[in-house]
Length: 583
Image 1 (cartoon, one colour):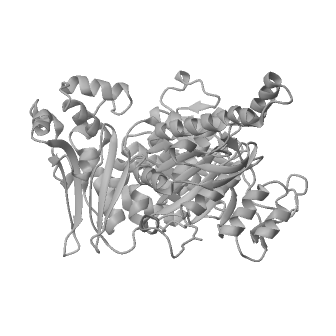
Image 2: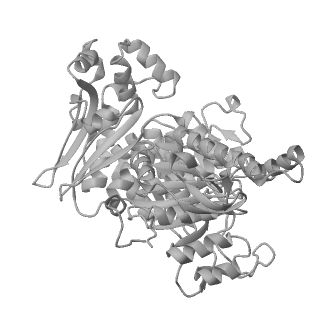
Image 3: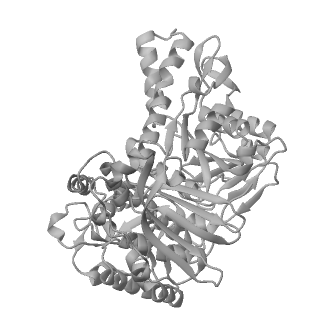
């Protein structure tokens, strides 16, 4: 929600406050679900402040422990010091999970952002925040994680904000940071006029006023948080994990809508290597959403996860899956599998840039002809949301350049440290960044395939990857990376594609020696970084990890969730701009 006194950085960035309570953070295994929710907002162009509660039951256990040890007359100030531990732990764990998935994340404890409160130790109200220090960390990261429910206090040292206090924390951050909305992520998809667990005919509010929310939410939202939002005119959304649907609470009249359909979708996973194995874990973590059919692999006997494995593509697709995830690798076999799935009208998710580069027209035509969908966010950039950025830019794109191969970037980073090429490659393969046969990465073919996809997305122009000039790491002198560093430069594999005045495109993959202050020089190890220039001269900087199991699996799963929403009628399909909520 924009205000006249918005700071310049707020006007330049969309900031969303996401609150995750113990109803969605019940156990340690739930952190990847929360990561997927945060990543969805990040790739849609938002910065995120995630406000988290302790894991379910943790605060109650700490309070019980305080009274067991300290007795029924235990001082409230000391009880608050113990009760805060659950939130501090949860915030740190979420930041670790975000980093594992390739997002830039940090945690701020109350004293690091001058988050102070006034009132009694176990039921205080927030009063102050060093917004500038928080914004400094927001600007450096995709997500900043903060503990809810707790704050510092001039007299008591540490205080808590009462039951449901994480809601109050989220509203307070939204107001002080001028965020355009606060989204309270709950175990229900909004506010209902009756308990939907008891009455299947309960109606869900699409919007309502603060007073109506206080009456209807029945403890779903902390009353203090509703009052604070009303006072500061903070827009609140109440939503479930992964949903675009929400109940909006603001100065609005009440309105109801039909709740979204709830279906368990059939999913076929083709390939279960490093990335596929990660995607399988994410699918199995949400059995209420996905029913995983036979998983296509080369050698079924080598897998022991709690699903069926098969060598037959026909068996994998026999049950007419709603969503097909192609991660088998290669080109022609993968393209055939994608065609087969699209011909059945399925939503297809792939990370295969080679198949896309060589079969773009036929794959998209097949999707359009049979009513399927084709999603490929992870095909370029891995966890760096370059595809979404291109679709989001208003106006024309004139050029895209980037460090777009995580394997090569890792190798060059090690060579700059004096490693031999053989040792660097062995380490990259051991970490899952490089394939057993790294030729496509090393020789620039992988980057050329990605440039082909980028040319389609940015300019709508066909580009043959075989015609893209490519420089190979195998042609480097042994000390080339070290010598660049001695000159105050850094050696990078850089892919570039730009639109020419006649409407054609020019592309290349080169080994460039960049000054240390060049934006692309900052990409380290398996990271990717892109610079997109539009016709107005604006440069859009896109960052993320471009290799590794979890960054790529997270990007693939984000496409899976988009496909799930499309099948439930809540999301556009192939080629359409993403739908974004605005206050």
